[in-house]
Image 1 (cartoon, rainbow, N blue to C red):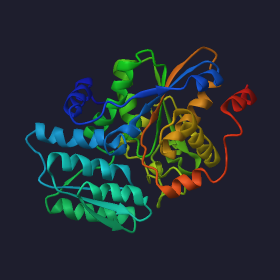
Image 2 (image 1 turned 135 degrees about the vertical axis):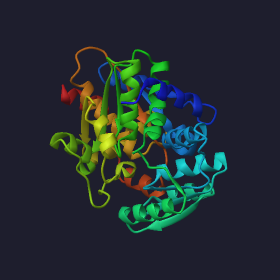
Image 3 (image 1 turned 60 degrees about the vertical axis):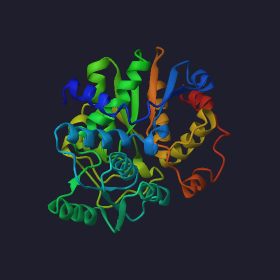
Image 4 (image 1 turned 45 degrees about the vertical axis):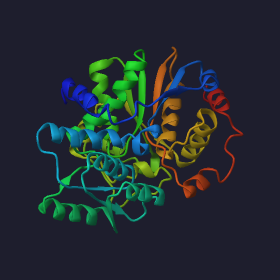
Length: 333
């Protein structure tokens, strides 16, 4: 477990560069869901459109603090990490090379290219990792999407902002891909609001984290799982993030149809562009809140807002607003 001064140092480092993202609520949703207070931490308004900018910037600035600012950077990604690294490198004037796997959303590929880094497509995660290692041998500095203490410390700053603004938060819900955001959220909670709960949320079709916790060891995929929630198509946790994820208060697994449902309702009620990987997190909060007998103040982390036209079409292929969350709530009760 990282010490608290590491998370505080991360917050101070990145504060001049990132956005302190807003927290929204919707009174109708609160009323529908039993009078609980539900808030949305909107990292879709973050630099490069996701929380990934926090970890990437903190990693590079921590290197600079140690007098080791890289001359060139390499990374691999299925999407948001690539644009976060590309943005951080452009901000600090560092050349970057990013390996993207086939199947990445065109919008995320274009966003990465727009920040001026070199983008190379690969056929698989395994190929990307091999080529990254070759670049590391040539002097590149590798920024892993989640398997690094500086990444986790950077992601923890999201929760630091939540507890600063909403000190009475009783639970935070975060999506789980590689586990960096969930790890950082749990870490910040241990220092700032130890009585609060931290839950992870992932699709049933990409539930490697939940299965790993049940089995007691890391379980992964050979290829990205088939889910509309592209932001959490990660192949597996690492041992580092698994240590944190095991400490969560639970992981909710969301069916694919429910991801579509909550994606429409987040857009309709909160009026923001949210990726399916984070809209589904409201589904996890819903499942927990319907078991609670006292009022709760919960925060749903909207981890990113990079949604392309094809994903929009899939999400809105039919109307799912005719059944309200209130109707679901009453059925559950």
